[in-house]
Amino acid sequence: MIANQHFSDLAMSDLQQRLTKLISLGTVHEVDYETATVKVKMGDWITAKLPWLTAQAAHDMTWQAPEVGEQVMVLSPCGDTSQGVVLGSLYSQQFAPKQLGVTPENRPDVHKVRYQDGSSITYDRKSHRYLIDIQGADATVDVLSAGTLNITTAKDIRVETQANATVLSAKDATLKCDGSAAVQAGGTSVLKEQVLP
Image 1 (tube, rainbow, N blue to C red):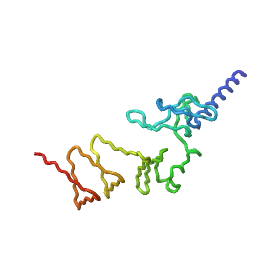
Image 2: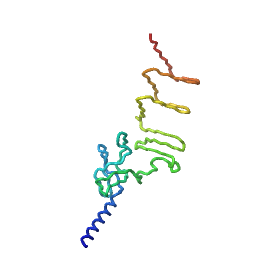
Image 3: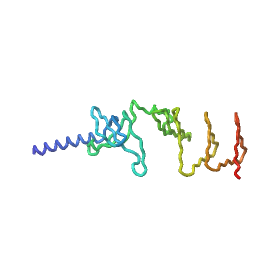
Image 4: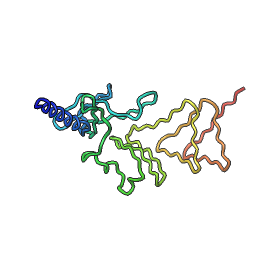
């Protein structure tokens, strides 16, 4: 009876430890971008390399790696941290929501992604505004299509640049306007035409 009680106590202790380790909080200590795994620091202890959860990982795939210092939640099946999976991130004192630059009154309506270089992608469903703000002197936005690219709007389209603008077409180009058309040049205006025989 004493032996059975001893084993029962051991089993209960093991169960409690496993339950304690089932879900844990920690901070990313190291990132392995090649294997898509991270080591997580929990107190004074650092885990083995653990995979992080992603939205899709088959024919359609997504990639968004955690960063060192990021607070994350780890799920350990059966309380075994060696089989742990990083479920996602949590805000912390170091990285708080206020750093997104979204005012508290607008937070219910705004979806925003902010990057370390200051660039951001924001949609405000209340004002119906989608903003892509790319920072940096060498910033570039590329839109590539193997087929047709259509841009349609019910209102005005405005394209403005502080430098040069170029439109290149390997074949014919057509500009159709149901109203008036005007071309204004502050400098020389040149129209070249090549007449084929």
